[in-house]
Image 1 (cartoon, rainbow, N blue to C red):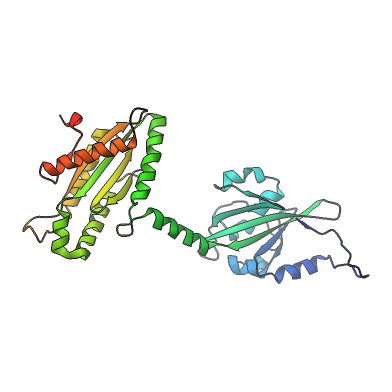
Image 2 (image 1 turned 60 degrees about the vertical axis):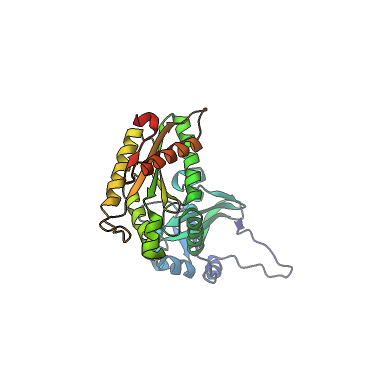
Length: 328
């Protein structure tokens, strides 16, 4: 916690406490810093803060419009919230909420940075400044630009959950999402549907077109499958030439409609097969639906969809298949 309480060195001369000295000290810092008075107006806006925001001190000093340097719409900074003793509402403003620091509040969030013309991920720390009588006289906020670190973290997270070839969710992400959706379906007693999509005769296609041609085929099929999805659906590369589609709160009839749209979309790609004159790439799809309950599990849903996919292959490919109990 910062304080302006006068302290004395062993010698006769006390430390200078005037505003001019504090301003010079702040200017010398390489860390972006601004200070608000009790009226929420900017008292100090150092050079590092000018560089970060693209806004010169001459435009902010004496004003309460500093939020414009960070956001497109009116929004209090962390210093404002601390100054107004509104720390309790930070969770409503910042999704991840604040962290209690030794002398104030600390938070990380994305900022629009309108004048800088770039969105940045900033770590902010706000601390109160008290006078010799213990009264609040100002609040200081320090900022750190963590954009590069945040983007690196996002990239690592994508590597952990995304398939490198198609950009779809990978098997790990599929397993985790299926478990989460099964739990939600159990809680809400809603149906959960699953499609297993397999590229027909892919080994022959890969042999005839080479691995690069096979990779391009998978990427185009992946885009075709993904194009038929709702916002809350998940498409994953399940393995090799097989894709899995999780359809939350979707009946088997609705899943069959989605499956047929996917089948038609892939067929319309007209990807030629060198190993079969006049033939094009197609997919076979197995569909399954379950209402989560204590007597069944997500792995059973996968098994039923897999069995339906096997029947689609056995019946001639380029078709969809439902569970036997539903198809009869």
